[in-house]
Image 1: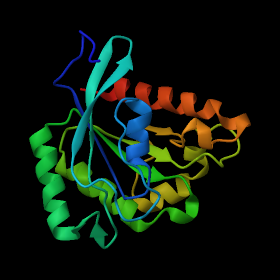
Image 2: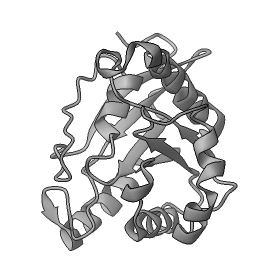
Image 3: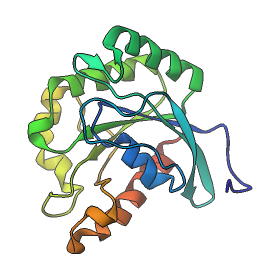
Amino acid sequence: MILIYFQSQRNVVIIGQSGVGKSSLINMLCPSANARTSNDIIGCTRHETMYPCDLGIRQSCWVHDTIGLEERSWGFLWAPKEEKQLKSYLKKSKPHLVVYCMPGVRRSLKKSHGRNFNKFKSVIGNVPIVVVVTNLEEWEGPLERWWSRNMDVLQKLGIPESTKHACVTTLPKDYLEPSKKYLYDLSREAVKALIRNNLR
């Protein structure tokens, strides 16, 4: 149910490479979304979809799922066509915030993550862009510590240290070890706070 204070014009667009957990993030933020998920590097999101999201503290927005980016081919379409489609969607959806998802597994970080971040940062102009680092269910210690521990890699990718971010797991509770189930709720609230604090 959409709450009576739902602010229908506040748009948050989620972008990132296939398999990084965009749809899982949306399911975490929007329990009624039931967005299709997959661990494959080939995207399972075939078209852009928007879902109502209650951010708490009497704030809300529309969260937009998008086709995944690929290093050679992007999602279900070849890169040039997909890039054009995503750029067009960003203009059409008039986002107030763009959330860029990237994996927290160090060996999975590639130059393409930095290229895509900076490419779409230039496309959206003055619209703020934040980073959500996913796949941290195996990380030992506070999830937020991942950012400072991997600053050397982020700098090589061209992602500034000052970038607003959240370090999370989007893995459903049923798949987390008993001792780590609390990370799901912690991650959800961290992303909601990130969105609330950076929406324009």
